[in-house]
Length: 309
Image (cartoon, rainbow, N blue to C red):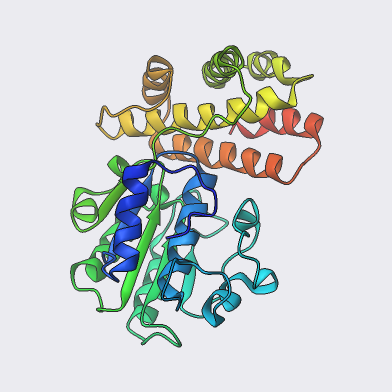
């Protein structure tokens, strides 16, 4: 499997490559850990690899299936990069399922629609792939609906669940899936450990300020980013991990990934699960805005307003 320059540990590369090469991909896989961007990139590369018709490394980027998948970038062997975040794959046998935009959690309706379509044979490929983004936001009803098809899936189906942590999902869903952990988020080349430590501290301060009764504390904690765009970009993934840990703790688990499990514990005590899910979602939106090169001052303003939800 061609990972298009993605930084993936050798064990995970070997496992996925072997599954793709032997056409023995499990019916359901869970991609957890790393960043949302990293998980989504890998999910799309796996999906493209499964429909690719090349006899060699996949995705080849030049076969008819890859050309359909990657649209206007067809024929470009090294395409994945950041473009895999801004443009969905266009192959008729690859679908991306996301929560309704007006809901905090991932409800049952998209899963019902997906489940009804899943039993329709693939259009062009031997496999039909569904990518479920933000699967950690699936509510219990939606997960139980998903479970019905995970228990007896069509032979040609592959579900890819992209989530911050599989521990948030029901055990029955996890037991019917193969979990791949991408590890901690990439810190980026050329970033000093001192800078990363500063970003971690800033993220913890923001997370603590979210619990303060007045917005002033949040504004004060965000002031550190005013003249440092790089620091904000580094701090947001750390902030998402803290909120993710808080949700995991809230649900009775202890598997933390952030550098501030103590802050996550306080958040779990202070807020209901729905509020924590909303905080994860808003932090994700801020990271996406950075990827779109949104105005830096506007981002700081949004940080203060959106996290006081």
